[in-house]
Length: 88
Image (cartoon, rainbow, N blue to C red):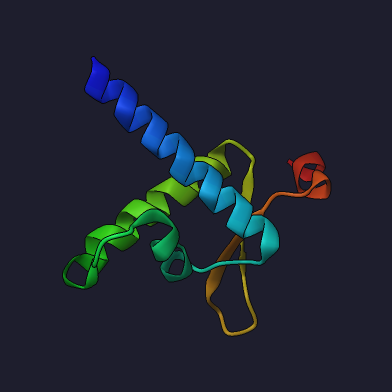
């Protein structure tokens, strides 16, 4: 069960890195890839984007992240504010 614990800690660290970055400015899914993946992912962009989106959705369902469409029509994710939490 040591491996399960390692994976849980790894995901907790990656989620925290996302939250810190999303507090600073909104990010698209693609913007978050370097925060989640340290290795070269150019041959696996679709899978990486799907995993990043799953992390963002997880944080959204916890109420820690919100998603908005920017002026160009692109979805961006940012850290939830107190006002966002009150509106839920």
